[in-house]
Image (cartoon, helix red, strand yellow):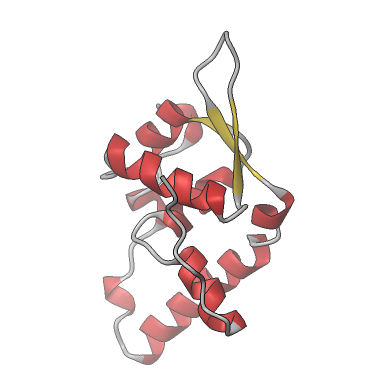
Length: 124
């Protein structure tokens, strides 16, 4: 099954299409820490279902952002590709801009810390 629809021609629209979705940016943010098994990602991201996680990972894989690593000894894991890793400064800039936006609109009190959605890797 092909997940990717034809991506927009304008670069900004293409970038937004690749990142769009409730969980893609969160998944990428978590994978910035390094490769993780599917069950680790599911445990670390509060509120994501296994079905949605797999769908989002497949879409990110098709977009070239993550790669799947399977081995006989362990369940499959995912890591950022070099293309996915190139999003590191973009994701951090988006976090900073999101904070700035909330402050400018006097909505800073509505912001959540990342720990509200992403659990610490050591606490699973």
